Image 1 (cartoon, rainbow, N blue to C red):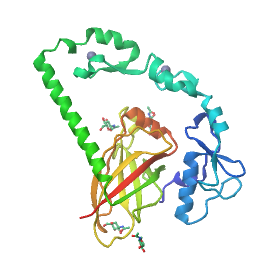
Image 2: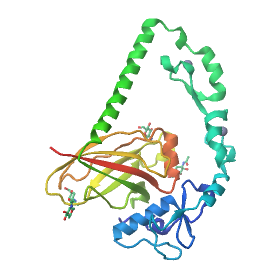
Image 3: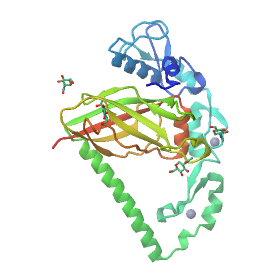
Image 4: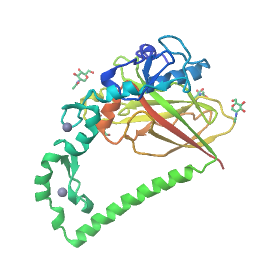
Length: 307
Ligand SMILES: *[C@@H]1O[C@H](CO)[C@@H](O)[C@H](O)[C@H]1NC(C)=O
Ligand SMILES: *[C@@H]1O[C@H](CO)[C@@H](O)[C@H](O)[C@H]1NC(C)=O
Ligand SMILES: *[C@@H]1O[C@H](CO)[C@@H](O)[C@H](O)[C@H]1NC(C)=O
Ligand SMILES: *[C@@H]1O[C@H](CO)[C@@H](O)[C@H](O)[C@H]1NC(C)=O
Ligand SMILES: [Zn+2]
Ligand SMILES: [Zn+2]
């Protein structure tokens, strides 16, 4: 799409970048390895070009049924050191989860009075001091009632969200697909990062997703609070307006922490792209992880509303 940086990206396949190997691995019938993200990417590209996908190394055919995971590689990778996101020390991948969850002195914890409304969050080594001086346990009954009311409201909103997801799941027309946002730069004087997915087909229509960092922010590296927003674009011509709900969630291979948010839009031939809406990543740490990754892999659901 006329963007620089994209062309070079396309042919770069991670063959075995061991230290940053977040996915299960796949191998072709000749034993060439690729990470699951790249594997899916090759299959998706091939589908779009209506070609048979081939291994970029030996050109043999690849497909989900012809390729298998390489458990030996996955095991070797799981033993390589990996950095704790809180204290930055290195641990074998297999121990990291427990370290981050239960042992790290810098892991983010919440006050035990969270249940009565204390919003404090901080590193584990400061928790005891905070809890000793936390004012929440001395609040009056009336103050606590107010806090609990607010918490009930939040809870109610969550329940409404889940209920609407459940009712969407009983729609007749539901489509979903793995989408891969790839980074590009605009060719403005000061280039700006944006993301775009290859075209994909859902509900028999062709679509594209675009994403950008902090809306129109040109130099988002100056802030520590980063957000991503995205838009869904209909590329096919349609014979009648198409009213949809859509939702981005974590895909099968990437560990992206994302809150489900349902968006609605009525697509027509003239009004064929949504506004940019927030990509509901849980926080800016998570957002940075996405920006640091080569691509962003998510799963998109589209529910067509039929009247
Ligand atoms: C999908 O679209 C094609 C052409 O746009 C059309 O011929 C076909 O009937 C459609 N299939 C369904 C299931 O709607
Ligand atoms: C990015 O967006 C967040 C939330 O809207 C805001 O707090 C932050 O200042 C923005 N960053 C920049 C560089 O504008
Ligand atoms: C942010 O980006 C600008 C150029 O776009 C660069 O000069 C600056 O050093 C960067 N700041 C940080 C903190 O990385
Ligand atoms: C999308 O809408 C714009 C503006 O109305 C129009 O110029 C463009 O041709 C449309 N694209 C498609 C694929 O229909
Ligand atoms: Zn740690
Ligand atoms: Zn507290």
